[in-house]
Image 1 (tube, helix red, strand yellow):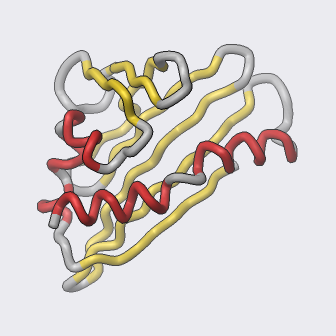
Image 2 (spheres, rainbow, N blue to C red; image 1 turned 90 degrees about the horizontal axis):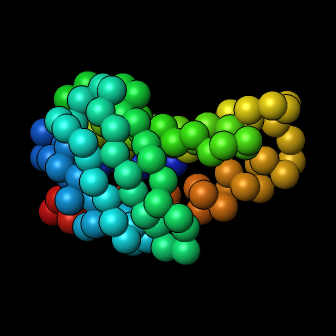
Length: 138
């Protein structure tokens, strides 16, 4: 299951991308981020760790990266499933569509209402993060 939020901006993908590719810039648009590290270049397969408010440190992997277009980071929660955070930049003529999505795949059961509530809790700050990203880039 997946929740998505998108908004158009006059900013270009090239202006926005450095705020993705340099993880220290994530503090500028992720209000609940306490700590983040990346063990290598911002490319597919690189791993890292992040800590969010009220959460233990979480390992993540960049599962797909295409400069100025998209990246996905994925976290596996033991005995629960996998959470994927998709970040996409789509050029629309003179504008760019910024799309952030959060996806959950349960490990050992069919997704259900409880899973959707869990995912909604994770997703709830995504719109604010996208607007904070736009503000930081400007």
